[in-house]
Image (tube, rainbow, N blue to C red; front, side, top):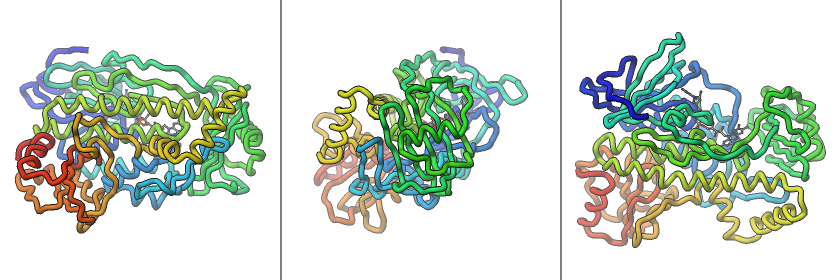
Length: 497
Ligand SMILES: Cc1cc2nc3c(=O)[nH]c(=O)nc-3n(C[C@H](O)[C@H](O)[C@H](O)COP(=O)(O)OP(=O)(O)OC[C@H]3O[C@@H](n4cnc5c(N)ncnc54)[C@H](O)[C@@H]3O)c2cc1C
Protein backbone atom coordinates (compact mmCIF):
# COMPACT_ATOMS: atom_id res chain seq x y z
CA UNK A 1 0.00 0.00 0.00
CA UNK A 2 2.72 2.47 0.89
CA UNK A 3 4.41 3.97 -2.11
CA UNK A 4 7.02 6.52 -2.91
CA UNK A 5 6.22 10.21 -3.25
CA UNK A 6 5.60 11.18 -6.84
CA UNK A 7 6.57 14.65 -7.88
CA UNK A 8 3.90 15.22 -10.50
CA UNK A 9 0.74 13.54 -11.65
CA UNK A 10 1.59 12.01 -14.97
CA UNK A 11 -1.89 12.04 -16.42
CA UNK A 12 -4.14 14.31 -14.50
CA UNK A 13 -4.70 15.26 -10.90
CA UNK A 14 -6.99 17.16 -8.62
CA UNK A 15 -4.28 19.65 -7.99
CA UNK A 16 -0.79 18.25 -7.64
CA UNK A 17 1.83 20.89 -7.06
CA UNK A 18 5.29 20.54 -8.56
CA UNK A 19 7.06 19.78 -5.27
CA UNK A 20 5.23 16.55 -4.51
CA UNK A 21 2.61 17.85 -2.07
CA UNK A 22 -0.78 17.13 -3.50
CA UNK A 23 -4.01 19.10 -3.27
CA UNK A 24 -7.66 18.32 -3.66
CA UNK A 25 -9.55 15.05 -3.64
CA UNK A 26 -10.01 12.16 -6.06
CA UNK A 27 -13.41 10.51 -5.73
CA UNK A 28 -13.59 7.05 -7.32
CA UNK A 29 -17.05 6.09 -8.61
CA UNK A 30 -19.79 8.38 -9.89
CA UNK A 31 -22.73 6.64 -8.22
CA UNK A 32 -24.97 8.64 -5.87
CA UNK A 33 -22.42 8.63 -3.02
CA UNK A 34 -19.54 9.91 -5.17
CA UNK A 35 -21.71 12.50 -6.91
CA UNK A 36 -22.92 14.05 -3.65
CA UNK A 37 -19.41 14.05 -2.17
CA UNK A 38 -17.79 15.59 -5.25
CA UNK A 39 -20.54 18.23 -5.50
CA UNK A 40 -20.01 19.25 -1.87
CA UNK A 41 -16.24 19.45 -2.23
CA UNK A 42 -16.43 21.47 -5.45
CA UNK A 43 -19.01 23.81 -3.88
CA UNK A 44 -16.56 24.33 -1.00
CA UNK A 45 -13.86 25.36 -3.50
CA UNK A 46 -11.83 22.14 -3.23
CA UNK A 47 -10.37 20.82 -6.51
CA UNK A 48 -12.07 17.47 -7.04
CA UNK A 49 -12.10 14.89 -9.83
CA UNK A 50 -14.60 12.05 -10.08
CA UNK A 51 -12.97 8.99 -11.63
CA UNK A 52 -15.52 6.63 -13.19
CA UNK A 53 -14.94 3.51 -15.25
CA UNK A 54 -18.23 3.78 -17.15
CA UNK A 55 -18.75 6.10 -20.12
CA UNK A 56 -20.74 9.22 -19.30
CA UNK A 57 -24.27 7.93 -19.21
CA UNK A 58 -26.56 7.67 -16.24
CA UNK A 59 -28.31 4.30 -16.36
CA UNK A 60 -32.06 4.37 -16.71
CA UNK A 61 -32.22 1.10 -14.77
CA UNK A 62 -32.92 1.99 -11.21
CA UNK A 63 -31.61 -0.04 -8.32
CA UNK A 64 -32.71 2.10 -5.37
CA UNK A 65 -36.14 3.67 -5.55
CA UNK A 66 -36.74 5.31 -2.18
CA UNK A 67 -35.46 8.45 -0.50
CA UNK A 68 -35.99 8.65 3.24
CA UNK A 69 -36.59 11.77 5.33
CA UNK A 70 -33.00 12.35 6.51
CA UNK A 71 -31.69 12.07 2.95
CA UNK A 72 -34.37 14.48 1.75
CA UNK A 73 -33.24 16.88 4.47
CA UNK A 74 -29.64 16.60 3.25
CA UNK A 75 -30.80 17.19 -0.32
CA UNK A 76 -32.83 20.18 0.91
CA UNK A 77 -29.61 21.57 2.40
CA UNK A 78 -28.23 21.40 -1.15
CA UNK A 79 -31.27 22.94 -2.86
CA UNK A 80 -32.26 19.68 -4.57
CA UNK A 81 -35.15 18.28 -2.51
CA UNK A 82 -37.98 20.35 -3.99
CA UNK A 83 -37.29 19.31 -7.60
CA UNK A 84 -37.01 15.63 -6.60
CA UNK A 85 -40.22 15.89 -4.59
CA UNK A 86 -41.92 17.18 -7.74
CA UNK A 87 -40.67 14.15 -9.72
CA UNK A 88 -41.30 11.30 -7.25
CA UNK A 89 -44.26 9.81 -5.46
CA UNK A 90 -44.50 10.51 -1.69
CA UNK A 91 -45.83 7.63 0.41
CA UNK A 92 -46.96 8.25 3.96
CA UNK A 93 -46.94 4.59 5.04
CA UNK A 94 -44.02 2.21 4.88
CA UNK A 95 -45.37 -1.34 4.66
CA UNK A 96 -42.49 -3.63 5.42
CA UNK A 97 -44.25 -7.01 5.45
CA UNK A 98 -47.49 -8.52 6.60
CA UNK A 99 -48.95 -6.42 9.37
CA UNK A 100 -45.84 -4.29 9.95
CA UNK A 101 -46.64 -0.81 8.74
CA UNK A 102 -44.75 2.29 9.75
CA UNK A 103 -46.87 5.41 9.46
CA UNK A 104 -44.64 8.35 8.67
CA UNK A 105 -47.21 11.12 9.06
CA UNK A 106 -46.00 11.95 12.58
CA UNK A 107 -42.30 12.07 11.61
CA UNK A 108 -40.82 15.29 13.00
CA UNK A 109 -39.43 16.38 9.65
CA UNK A 110 -40.44 18.66 6.79
CA UNK A 111 -40.41 15.36 4.84
CA UNK A 112 -42.84 13.15 6.76
CA UNK A 113 -42.98 10.50 4.04
CA UNK A 114 -40.80 8.26 1.91
CA UNK A 115 -40.26 9.50 -1.64
CA UNK A 116 -40.39 6.81 -4.30
CA UNK A 117 -38.38 7.75 -7.36
CA UNK A 118 -35.77 6.03 -9.48
CA UNK A 119 -32.13 6.21 -8.41
CA UNK A 120 -31.22 7.75 -11.79
CA UNK A 121 -33.33 10.83 -11.00
CA UNK A 122 -31.31 11.33 -7.81
CA UNK A 123 -28.06 10.83 -9.75
CA UNK A 124 -29.13 13.32 -12.45
CA UNK A 125 -29.75 16.05 -9.87
CA UNK A 126 -26.52 15.34 -8.01
CA UNK A 127 -24.48 15.21 -11.21
CA UNK A 128 -25.85 18.55 -12.43
CA UNK A 129 -25.01 20.15 -9.09
CA UNK A 130 -21.47 18.72 -9.12
CA UNK A 131 -20.84 19.95 -12.68
CA UNK A 132 -22.20 23.42 -11.87
CA UNK A 133 -20.00 23.60 -8.77
CA UNK A 134 -16.90 22.84 -10.89
CA UNK A 135 -16.18 19.16 -10.16
CA UNK A 136 -14.15 17.51 -12.90
CA UNK A 137 -15.10 14.11 -14.33
CA UNK A 138 -12.76 11.47 -15.73
CA UNK A 139 -15.06 8.92 -17.39
CA UNK A 140 -13.89 5.64 -18.89
CA UNK A 141 -11.08 5.67 -16.35
CA UNK A 142 -10.82 2.59 -14.19
CA UNK A 143 -8.88 2.60 -10.94
CA UNK A 144 -6.65 -0.48 -10.82
CA UNK A 145 -4.64 0.26 -7.68
CA UNK A 146 -3.23 3.03 -5.54
CA UNK A 147 -0.27 4.04 -3.47
CA UNK A 148 -0.09 6.65 -0.72
CA UNK A 149 2.56 8.49 1.20
CA UNK A 150 2.78 11.33 3.71
CA UNK A 151 1.74 13.95 1.15
CA UNK A 152 -0.95 12.37 -0.92
CA UNK A 153 -2.50 9.48 -2.81
CA UNK A 154 -1.64 8.28 -6.31
CA UNK A 155 -4.31 6.36 -8.16
CA UNK A 156 -3.23 3.89 -10.82
CA UNK A 157 -5.76 3.99 -13.62
CA UNK A 158 -6.52 2.40 -16.98
CA UNK A 159 -8.16 4.58 -19.60
CA UNK A 160 -10.56 3.59 -22.39
CA UNK A 161 -7.67 3.13 -24.84
CA UNK A 162 -6.11 0.66 -22.40
CA UNK A 163 -3.29 3.06 -21.52
CA UNK A 164 -2.24 3.12 -17.87
CA UNK A 165 -1.96 6.44 -16.08
CA UNK A 166 -1.69 8.02 -12.65
CA UNK A 167 -3.71 10.66 -10.85
CA UNK A 168 -2.67 12.31 -7.63
CA UNK A 169 -4.40 14.28 -4.89
CA UNK A 170 -4.16 14.94 -1.17
CA UNK A 171 -6.96 12.48 -0.38
CA UNK A 172 -8.93 9.79 -2.22
CA UNK A 173 -12.37 8.43 -1.47
CA UNK A 174 -13.57 5.07 -2.74
CA UNK A 175 -17.25 5.37 -3.61
CA UNK A 176 -16.84 2.57 -6.12
CA UNK A 177 -19.50 0.21 -4.87
CA UNK A 178 -19.71 -3.38 -3.72
CA UNK A 179 -16.58 -4.63 -5.53
CA UNK A 180 -14.56 -1.52 -4.61
CA UNK A 181 -11.08 -1.54 -6.15
CA UNK A 182 -10.09 1.17 -3.66
CA UNK A 183 -11.05 -1.03 -0.69
CA UNK A 184 -9.01 -3.88 -2.13
CA UNK A 185 -6.05 -1.61 -2.90
CA UNK A 186 -5.80 -0.49 0.73
CA UNK A 187 -6.01 -4.11 1.84
CA UNK A 188 -9.31 -3.93 3.71
CA UNK A 189 -11.42 -7.09 3.90
CA UNK A 190 -15.19 -7.02 3.41
CA UNK A 191 -16.41 -9.60 5.89
CA UNK A 192 -19.99 -10.82 5.85
CA UNK A 193 -22.20 -13.21 3.93
CA UNK A 194 -24.98 -13.59 1.40
CA UNK A 195 -28.31 -13.36 3.18
CA UNK A 196 -30.90 -13.94 0.55
CA UNK A 197 -30.52 -15.45 -2.91
CA UNK A 198 -32.47 -15.37 -6.13
CA UNK A 199 -34.52 -12.27 -5.42
CA UNK A 200 -36.35 -11.15 -8.56
CA UNK A 201 -36.94 -7.57 -9.59
CA UNK A 202 -39.13 -6.20 -12.38
CA UNK A 203 -40.22 -2.69 -13.34
CA UNK A 204 -43.62 -3.23 -14.94
CA UNK A 205 -46.93 -1.68 -15.96
CA UNK A 206 -50.01 -2.95 -14.07
CA UNK A 207 -53.52 -3.36 -15.52
CA UNK A 208 -55.04 -2.98 -12.05
CA UNK A 209 -53.79 -0.47 -9.55
CA UNK A 210 -53.02 -2.04 -6.14
CA UNK A 211 -55.39 -0.86 -3.40
CA UNK A 212 -52.45 0.37 -1.34
CA UNK A 213 -49.79 2.63 -2.84
CA UNK A 214 -47.16 0.40 -1.34
CA UNK A 215 -48.14 -3.23 -1.29
CA UNK A 216 -46.17 -5.96 0.47
CA UNK A 217 -46.79 -9.36 1.94
CA UNK A 218 -44.91 -12.41 3.12
CA UNK A 219 -46.48 -15.88 3.27
CA UNK A 220 -43.76 -18.07 4.73
CA UNK A 221 -42.32 -19.48 1.53
CA UNK A 222 -42.53 -16.29 -0.57
CA UNK A 223 -42.78 -12.55 -0.35
CA UNK A 224 -43.52 -9.74 -2.77
CA UNK A 225 -43.44 -6.00 -2.71
CA UNK A 226 -44.86 -3.44 -5.16
CA UNK A 227 -44.25 0.32 -5.18
CA UNK A 228 -45.19 2.96 -7.78
CA UNK A 229 -42.52 5.12 -9.44
CA UNK A 230 -45.12 7.76 -10.31
CA UNK A 231 -44.47 7.51 -14.08
CA UNK A 232 -46.91 4.61 -14.61
CA UNK A 233 -44.32 1.92 -13.83
CA UNK A 234 -44.19 -0.12 -10.64
CA UNK A 235 -41.18 -1.72 -8.97
CA UNK A 236 -41.89 -5.36 -8.10
CA UNK A 237 -39.54 -7.35 -5.87
CA UNK A 238 -40.22 -11.00 -5.08
CA UNK A 239 -38.66 -14.09 -3.56
CA UNK A 240 -39.59 -17.76 -3.34
CA UNK A 241 -37.94 -20.06 -0.86
CA UNK A 242 -37.91 -23.09 -3.16
CA UNK A 243 -36.34 -21.25 -6.11
CA UNK A 244 -32.68 -20.93 -5.23
CA UNK A 245 -30.85 -20.35 -8.51
CA UNK A 246 -27.78 -18.30 -9.47
CA UNK A 247 -28.16 -14.61 -10.44
CA UNK A 248 -27.36 -15.58 -14.04
CA UNK A 249 -30.38 -17.93 -14.38
CA UNK A 250 -32.86 -16.64 -16.99
CA UNK A 251 -35.84 -14.70 -15.63
CA UNK A 252 -39.17 -14.16 -17.33
CA UNK A 253 -42.23 -12.22 -16.29
CA UNK A 254 -44.20 -15.41 -15.62
CA UNK A 255 -41.87 -16.27 -12.74
CA UNK A 256 -42.39 -12.79 -11.25
CA UNK A 257 -46.19 -13.08 -11.75
CA UNK A 258 -46.26 -16.42 -9.99
CA UNK A 259 -44.38 -15.12 -6.92
CA UNK A 260 -46.63 -12.06 -6.71
CA UNK A 261 -49.79 -14.20 -6.99
CA UNK A 262 -48.51 -16.52 -4.28
CA UNK A 263 -47.70 -13.64 -1.91
CA UNK A 264 -50.39 -11.08 -2.67
CA UNK A 265 -53.26 -13.15 -4.05
CA UNK A 266 -53.16 -11.82 -7.62
CA UNK A 267 -50.69 -10.35 -10.11
CA UNK A 268 -52.46 -7.05 -10.97
CA UNK A 269 -52.16 -7.84 -14.71
CA UNK A 270 -48.47 -7.02 -14.84
CA UNK A 271 -46.95 -6.54 -18.29
CA UNK A 272 -44.28 -4.76 -20.35
CA UNK A 273 -41.29 -5.08 -18.04
CA UNK A 274 -38.76 -2.35 -18.84
CA UNK A 275 -36.20 -4.04 -16.60
CA UNK A 276 -35.93 -7.45 -14.97
CA UNK A 277 -33.10 -8.75 -12.87
CA UNK A 278 -32.26 -11.53 -10.49
CA UNK A 279 -29.93 -10.66 -7.62
CA UNK A 280 -28.70 -11.85 -4.28
CA UNK A 281 -28.14 -9.72 -1.26
CA UNK A 282 -25.00 -9.59 0.84
CA UNK A 283 -24.50 -8.22 4.33
CA UNK A 284 -20.95 -6.90 4.60
CA UNK A 285 -19.10 -4.05 6.24
CA UNK A 286 -15.48 -2.93 5.97
CA UNK A 287 -13.83 -2.95 9.43
CA UNK A 288 -12.42 0.54 8.80
CA UNK A 289 -13.64 3.41 6.65
CA UNK A 290 -10.23 5.09 6.57
CA UNK A 291 -6.70 3.95 5.83
CA UNK A 292 -4.32 6.90 5.92
CA UNK A 293 -5.41 9.36 3.24
CA UNK A 294 -7.95 7.00 1.71
CA UNK A 295 -11.61 6.78 2.75
CA UNK A 296 -14.50 4.49 1.83
CA UNK A 297 -18.14 5.53 1.58
CA UNK A 298 -21.43 4.07 0.35
CA UNK A 299 -21.59 0.50 -0.94
CA UNK A 300 -17.79 0.33 -0.95
CA UNK A 301 -17.98 0.50 2.86
CA UNK A 302 -21.21 -1.42 3.60
CA UNK A 303 -23.83 -3.45 1.78
CA UNK A 304 -27.00 -5.00 3.10
CA UNK A 305 -30.38 -6.26 1.99
CA UNK A 306 -32.76 -3.88 0.19
CA UNK A 307 -35.30 -4.29 3.04
CA UNK A 308 -36.24 -0.85 4.30
CA UNK A 309 -34.57 0.77 1.25
CA UNK A 310 -31.58 2.11 3.15
CA UNK A 311 -28.55 1.43 0.91
CA UNK A 312 -28.37 4.55 -1.21
CA UNK A 313 -29.67 6.61 1.69
CA UNK A 314 -26.86 5.48 3.99
CA UNK A 315 -24.23 6.16 1.32
CA UNK A 316 -25.53 9.70 0.80
CA UNK A 317 -25.36 10.30 4.56
CA UNK A 318 -21.75 9.02 4.58
CA UNK A 319 -20.88 11.53 1.86
CA UNK A 320 -22.59 14.39 3.73
CA UNK A 321 -20.60 13.50 6.86
CA UNK A 322 -17.22 13.31 5.12
CA UNK A 323 -17.38 16.20 2.65
CA UNK A 324 -17.33 19.15 5.07
CA UNK A 325 -14.59 17.51 7.15
CA UNK A 326 -12.32 17.05 4.12
CA UNK A 327 -13.05 20.63 3.02
CA UNK A 328 -12.30 22.04 6.49
CA UNK A 329 -8.99 20.16 6.73
CA UNK A 330 -7.92 21.07 3.18
CA UNK A 331 -8.75 24.74 3.78
CA UNK A 332 -6.66 24.60 6.96
CA UNK A 333 -9.64 25.41 9.20
CA UNK A 334 -9.53 22.11 11.08
CA UNK A 335 -6.95 19.71 12.39
CA UNK A 336 -6.58 16.51 10.30
CA UNK A 337 -7.75 14.61 13.43
CA UNK A 338 -11.29 15.74 12.52
CA UNK A 339 -11.17 13.16 9.71
CA UNK A 340 -11.07 10.32 12.26
CA UNK A 341 -14.58 11.25 13.33
CA UNK A 342 -15.83 10.03 9.94
CA UNK A 343 -15.07 6.48 11.06
CA UNK A 344 -16.27 6.94 14.64
CA UNK A 345 -19.56 8.51 13.51
CA UNK A 346 -20.45 6.57 10.37
CA UNK A 347 -19.19 3.06 11.08
CA UNK A 348 -21.70 2.48 13.94
CA UNK A 349 -24.52 3.76 11.72
CA UNK A 350 -23.49 1.32 8.97
CA UNK A 351 -23.49 -1.52 11.52
CA UNK A 352 -26.93 -0.55 12.75
CA UNK A 353 -28.32 -0.42 9.19
CA UNK A 354 -26.90 -3.89 8.51
CA UNK A 355 -28.65 -5.18 11.61
CA UNK A 356 -32.02 -3.56 10.98
CA UNK A 357 -32.29 -4.41 7.28
CA UNK A 358 -31.05 -7.96 7.96
CA UNK A 359 -33.58 -8.32 10.78
CA UNK A 360 -36.40 -7.16 8.51
CA UNK A 361 -35.55 -9.60 5.76
CA UNK A 362 -35.23 -12.51 8.19
CA UNK A 363 -38.62 -11.69 9.66
CA UNK A 364 -40.11 -11.43 6.17
CA UNK A 365 -38.70 -14.91 5.38
CA UNK A 366 -39.93 -16.35 8.68
CA UNK A 367 -41.46 -19.83 8.45
CA UNK A 368 -41.07 -21.46 11.88
CA UNK A 369 -43.84 -20.89 14.42
CA UNK A 370 -41.59 -18.99 16.84
CA UNK A 371 -40.25 -16.63 14.16
CA UNK A 372 -43.78 -16.05 12.89
CA UNK A 373 -44.86 -15.28 16.46
CA UNK A 374 -41.92 -12.88 16.84
CA UNK A 375 -42.93 -11.16 13.63
CA UNK A 376 -46.50 -10.74 14.79
CA UNK A 377 -45.32 -9.43 18.18
CA UNK A 378 -42.99 -6.93 16.54
CA UNK A 379 -45.74 -5.70 14.23
CA UNK A 380 -47.97 -5.14 17.28
CA UNK A 381 -45.22 -3.36 19.21
CA UNK A 382 -44.40 -1.05 16.32
CA UNK A 383 -48.07 -0.29 15.73
CA UNK A 384 -49.09 0.32 19.36
CA UNK A 385 -46.07 1.26 21.48
CA UNK A 386 -44.96 4.85 20.86
CA UNK A 387 -41.25 4.57 21.81
CA UNK A 388 -40.81 1.37 19.75
CA UNK A 389 -42.54 2.99 16.78
CA UNK A 390 -40.41 6.13 17.06
CA UNK A 391 -37.22 4.09 17.28
CA UNK A 392 -38.11 1.99 14.22
CA UNK A 393 -39.14 5.11 12.31
CA UNK A 394 -35.96 6.96 13.32
CA UNK A 395 -33.73 4.11 12.15
CA UNK A 396 -35.37 3.49 8.81
CA UNK A 397 -35.79 7.14 7.88
CA UNK A 398 -32.34 8.06 9.23
CA UNK A 399 -33.63 10.90 11.41
CA UNK A 400 -33.10 8.92 14.61
CA UNK A 401 -29.31 8.72 14.35
CA UNK A 402 -27.17 10.93 16.56
CA UNK A 403 -23.41 11.11 16.94
CA UNK A 404 -21.46 10.75 20.19
CA UNK A 405 -21.09 13.93 22.25
CA UNK A 406 -18.33 14.73 24.74
CA UNK A 407 -19.13 14.09 28.41
CA UNK A 408 -20.98 17.02 29.95
CA UNK A 409 -21.96 18.52 26.59
CA UNK A 410 -25.32 20.24 26.09
CA UNK A 411 -28.02 17.61 25.36
CA UNK A 412 -28.39 18.86 21.78
CA UNK A 413 -24.76 18.16 20.86
CA UNK A 414 -24.39 15.35 18.31
CA UNK A 415 -28.08 15.37 17.48
CA UNK A 416 -29.69 16.02 14.12
CA UNK A 417 -31.32 19.41 14.10
CA UNK A 418 -34.66 19.68 12.30
CA UNK A 419 -35.54 22.42 9.85
CA UNK A 420 -36.26 25.12 12.43
CA UNK A 421 -37.64 28.51 11.47
CA UNK A 422 -35.13 31.35 11.55
CA UNK A 423 -35.93 35.03 11.19
CA UNK A 424 -36.15 35.56 7.42
CA UNK A 425 -35.97 31.89 6.44
CA UNK A 426 -35.37 28.36 7.66
CA UNK A 427 -32.30 26.44 8.77
CA UNK A 428 -31.95 24.07 5.81
CA UNK A 429 -31.95 27.05 3.44
CA UNK A 430 -29.23 28.65 5.58
CA UNK A 431 -27.20 25.41 5.29
CA UNK A 432 -27.16 25.66 1.48
CA UNK A 433 -23.90 27.59 1.59
CA UNK A 434 -22.17 24.45 2.95
CA UNK A 435 -21.12 26.45 6.02
CA UNK A 436 -21.67 26.11 9.77
CA UNK A 437 -24.72 27.99 11.00
CA UNK A 438 -24.59 29.77 14.35
CA UNK A 439 -28.12 30.17 15.68
CA UNK A 440 -28.00 32.79 18.36
CA UNK A 441 -30.57 34.94 20.17
CA UNK A 442 -28.20 37.94 19.93
CA UNK A 443 -26.66 39.93 17.13
CA UNK A 444 -23.35 38.37 16.13
CA UNK A 445 -20.70 39.59 13.75
CA UNK A 446 -19.34 36.74 11.59
CA UNK A 447 -16.70 38.97 9.98
CA UNK A 448 -13.50 37.06 9.44
CA UNK A 449 -15.37 33.75 9.12
CA UNK A 450 -17.91 34.57 6.43
CA UNK A 451 -16.41 31.87 4.19
CA UNK A 452 -17.37 29.18 6.72
CA UNK A 453 -20.04 30.58 9.01
CA UNK A 454 -23.59 31.86 8.54
CA UNK A 455 -25.38 33.54 11.43
CA UNK A 456 -29.12 33.04 12.04
CA UNK A 457 -31.63 33.89 14.75
CA UNK A 458 -34.46 31.74 16.13
CA UNK A 459 -37.84 32.85 14.82
CA UNK A 460 -39.29 31.42 18.06
CA UNK A 461 -37.20 33.67 20.30
CA UNK A 462 -35.47 30.63 21.89
CA UNK A 463 -32.47 31.57 24.09
CA UNK A 464 -30.13 28.62 23.32
CA UNK A 465 -27.05 29.30 21.19
CA UNK A 466 -26.44 26.45 18.77
CA UNK A 467 -23.60 25.86 16.33
CA UNK A 468 -24.87 23.62 13.52
CA UNK A 469 -22.40 21.63 11.42
CA UNK A 470 -22.72 21.82 7.62
CA UNK A 471 -24.33 18.34 7.69
CA UNK A 472 -27.14 19.45 10.00
CA UNK A 473 -25.91 17.98 13.31
CA UNK A 474 -25.27 20.09 16.39
CA UNK A 475 -21.55 20.75 16.94
CA UNK A 476 -21.93 22.79 20.11
CA UNK A 477 -24.71 24.39 22.13
CA UNK A 478 -25.05 26.40 25.33
CA UNK A 479 -27.68 28.33 27.27
CA UNK A 480 -26.81 32.04 27.47
CA UNK A 481 -23.05 31.70 26.84
CA UNK A 482 -20.88 34.82 27.01
CA UNK A 483 -19.00 36.03 23.91
CA UNK A 484 -15.75 34.37 24.97
CA UNK A 485 -17.41 30.92 25.14
CA UNK A 486 -18.97 31.36 21.74
CA UNK A 487 -15.60 32.40 20.30
CA UNK A 488 -13.93 29.39 21.91
CA UNK A 489 -16.47 27.05 20.30
CA UNK A 490 -16.07 28.77 16.94
CA UNK A 491 -12.28 28.48 17.05
CA UNK A 492 -12.51 24.80 17.90
CA UNK A 493 -15.01 24.00 15.12
CA UNK A 494 -14.35 26.53 12.37
CA UNK A 495 -10.77 27.67 13.03
CA UNK A 496 -9.49 31.16 13.79
CA UNK A 497 -11.09 34.11 12.08
C1 LIG B 1 -32.53 -4.29 -6.32
C2 LIG B 1 -31.96 -3.23 -5.47
C3 LIG B 1 -32.82 -2.37 -4.83
C4 LIG B 1 -32.31 -1.36 -4.03
N1 LIG B 1 -33.19 -0.53 -3.42
C5 LIG B 1 -32.72 0.47 -2.66
C6 LIG B 1 -33.61 1.43 -2.06
O1 LIG B 1 -34.83 1.40 -2.23
N2 LIG B 1 -33.09 2.41 -1.31
C7 LIG B 1 -31.74 2.53 -1.13
O2 LIG B 1 -31.31 3.46 -0.43
N3 LIG B 1 -30.86 1.66 -1.70
C8 LIG B 1 -31.31 0.63 -2.47
N4 LIG B 1 -30.43 -0.22 -3.08
C9 LIG B 1 -28.99 -0.04 -2.92
C10 LIG B 1 -28.43 1.10 -3.78
O3 LIG B 1 -28.68 0.89 -5.15
C11 LIG B 1 -26.94 1.25 -3.53
O4 LIG B 1 -26.76 1.30 -2.13
C12 LIG B 1 -26.36 2.51 -4.15
O5 LIG B 1 -26.37 2.46 -5.56
C13 LIG B 1 -24.93 2.69 -3.69
O6 LIG B 1 -24.40 3.85 -4.25
P1 LIG B 1 -22.84 4.05 -4.35
O7 LIG B 1 -22.66 5.39 -5.00
O8 LIG B 1 -22.22 3.83 -3.03
O9 LIG B 1 -22.32 2.88 -5.29
P2 LIG B 1 -22.75 2.51 -6.78
O10 LIG B 1 -24.08 3.06 -7.12
O11 LIG B 1 -22.53 1.05 -6.90
O12 LIG B 1 -21.70 3.29 -7.67
C14 LIG B 1 -20.34 2.88 -7.78
C15 LIG B 1 -19.73 3.50 -9.03
O13 LIG B 1 -18.34 3.21 -9.04
C16 LIG B 1 -17.96 2.84 -10.36
N5 LIG B 1 -16.75 2.00 -10.24
C17 LIG B 1 -16.68 0.75 -9.74
N6 LIG B 1 -15.41 0.30 -9.76
C18 LIG B 1 -14.65 1.29 -10.29
C19 LIG B 1 -13.27 1.43 -10.57
N7 LIG B 1 -12.37 0.45 -10.30
N8 LIG B 1 -12.80 2.58 -11.14
C20 LIG B 1 -13.69 3.60 -11.41
N9 LIG B 1 -15.03 3.51 -11.16
C21 LIG B 1 -15.50 2.38 -10.60
C22 LIG B 1 -19.16 2.10 -10.90
O14 LIG B 1 -19.16 2.09 -12.33
C23 LIG B 1 -20.31 2.93 -10.32
O15 LIG B 1 -20.70 3.98 -11.17
C24 LIG B 1 -30.90 -1.23 -3.88
C25 LIG B 1 -30.05 -2.10 -4.54
C26 LIG B 1 -30.55 -3.10 -5.31
C27 LIG B 1 -29.62 -4.05 -6.02
